[in-house]
Amino acid sequence: MAYNLTRDGNIGILEMASPPANAYTKDMMLELQRCLDEARNDDQVRCVVVKSALERFFCAGADISTLDGATAGGFADFLTMAHETMDMIEKTPKIFIAAIAGHCIGGGLELALSCDLRFAADGKYGIGLGEVNLGLSPGMGGTQRLPRLVAPGHALNLMITGEMLSPTRAYELGIVEWLHPADEHWDAVMAHAGKLAAGASMAQGYIKLSVRRGLEGSLAQGLAVERANQSILFGSEDAAEGLKAFLEKRKAEFKGR
Image (cartoon, rainbow, N blue to C red; front, side, top):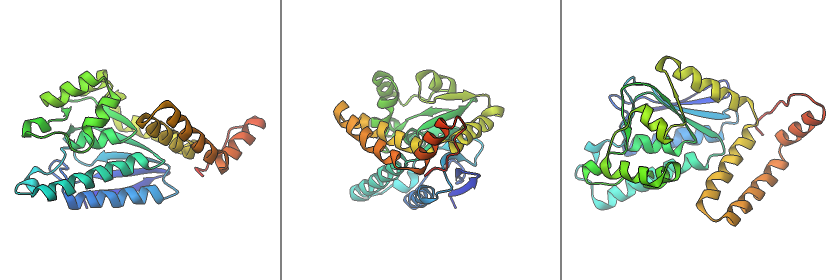
């Protein structure tokens, strides 16, 4: 299988394993959707880490060889499926962390951009959106997500030049939020994921949805989303436990529901 979901405690580990570069096909995208649906509906999974089983690549994006000879309609269907898959990550009320430790190119970076947090290992590999070199545009949300994450001018320049960044430069621009030495990278990812999984993960998920939905519209629309999600959280077991623990001056024991 190209994608596999396992659990380490309450942390879901979504691993990509399709040598040589985790380049994906339409069938693989369906496989990824199944893993995402499993992570979404498993109450024991309270935070998800997306990683690669390969040493040199996080993900190289779409398998270009499968697009050769594709019809316009077939290509449009592929793009729709890719967008729907990335939307599944954004709309799941759980935090997704991209653990990048190898080349993260094209759709691979777009997968990382759909995650909520990005950790990179220092090393000699590239991060970027190189679709322009094929006469194409980023097609898995890169034109929309990258300018929402970093300065639009920097985002545009990266896409129109196809420049590959070092992990250090990607960190400086804000494409990745954390950069660690390679031998400390995985421990840092799992330590952060562990803290999230042990915390009020339901609240984390709805904060994520409020932020993402709010960025799509006006301030008034965002505030309406915030109120609605806060009302959902107020009726949760975690909120009852959090308020009770506060009044009893003890540490809350959250269950993610």
